[in-house]
Image (cartoon, rainbow, N blue to C red; front, side):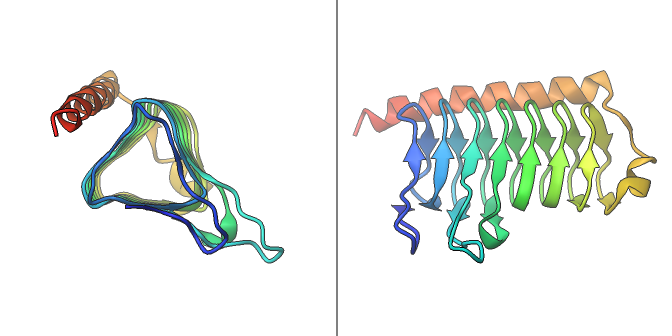
Length: 186
């Protein structure tokens, strides 16, 4: 479902993107080329700042927002998902938040008030909040990162983790093409 927010903002979705019919996209959301938005995802830009303003939620080209993902923002803050990035099943991205290009966010992970640098991997069931994860870092499954001291324990992304992330992004771009073809059959 594509709908306006209370401020009257309507999502802008590139014609090449695929949005599953069960997904909800509300408000000041910009979806770029070849994005896959899976079943039951919710992307909602509807809260405003104290002065009534609102930054958009932006999903970069060739990225995928998988089944059951929630993307929202506190008090009109921006959320940006870079290009070729994957937000895996049932994750939550709550703004303010920036996810760089070629990032993989694993199943059930939670991001809040943070920056995830390009090429990083946040594995399954992890929490990252209130910090800046540098480019090319790997956060292992079930890790909680709440500040820069926690980041000192994190090692750069191993090559095999980067290859996995790139494969997930490629696979989902193929899904966009496949589902768009199916949509033309009805």
